[in-house]
Image 1 (cartoon, rainbow, N blue to C red):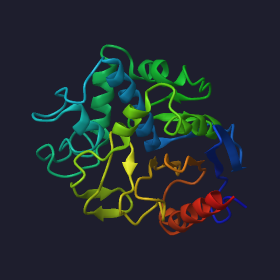
Image 2: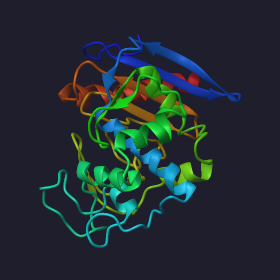
Image 3: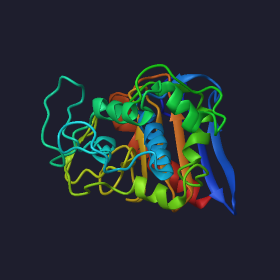
Length: 266
């Protein structure tokens, strides 16, 4: 019943941090099937960046990308870079321009001379024992793995073991919160808050439904999604056999709202 109305064969995990332990409230689908996470990969890159910044291997103010841009600008889609390397650019800090290219540059910078896949694995997949997860493409959209692994990763944003809570809080805080911008597939929002990897709901009316403004996460073209509210200890993850499309625009807002309502009263 968890994903009734979702086309194809979704896999879903709904988790809650209750009484000092994780409870799996509901699941559906094949949680071991290896599926593309698409742009949900940006959440992983964001957490790996937070690990490096916390360890002192980089700072958010490091100049990376076009003149005037920093690592923080790249991670929050405010560097002025376009969606891809050849797309139109603007000055850093002017507006929220969703950029795969910018996230790729951030990962390459943090990886140094190391292969980005190795960097991601060393920082996150290995410590969390995400045995099915691997990067098969870009750091902005190339991870694939099981829904079980995705749930394990997503719980890190509520009960982090690789960074302190203070670093988590900085990472999910909107960077340049006044900027307007476009959430791909959902339209323009003013403002369009974004953290250093995670999208922050704020007052947007879109895929996060009626989750609180402090909620954050990401979705991908593959139909995968992660939606988190750290204050409530709620984590909702899903993967899909049907790519994002009009069905998601119609289904996700009401569905995420309904799932949270059920979780907070169960």
